[in-house]
Length: 203
Image (cartoon, rainbow, N blue to C red; front, side):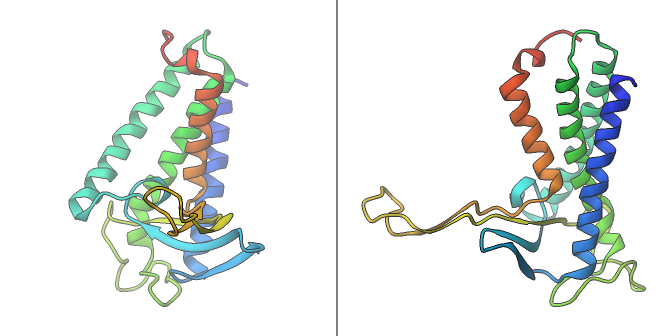
């Protein structure tokens, strides 16, 4: 089995799990609904965002469309880079799979932006309909990214003596994310820890 085939299989697995979970959440829960998986520190919490990983956003409709277009261009470059890697004898399999993980994560969130606005009605105070008669909640490229993993492992207050944020409430880990976000994060950390020398080497 070639290096490229292995990377494609990994990408397909990540995309399948990511999209299957998002579609399940979108078609069975309403926005803000949640349930505890393990105690109070692993929660499935349905939320949506217009922008980047872990709920970060660019403002307004222009920010949304700009981000969607940037993602598509970036995924194209990553895909081309992955193909070039597959032809190189110097790159190891671990590095190539990590690039594949970034590609899969980026593509997973692009699919939300491309199709979810057309495929689903909105999820405000109700479970979304799939392919509603009156059309979806947004046109192509304006769909929202579905997030669901919430890990409020530490929920408390900063001590009084703590600079700036003394006595303020904090939650760690606050961002809600999805499989695609996790795939990008794990892949980037893996590259930084184990494959930094591969980044600048010639293809």
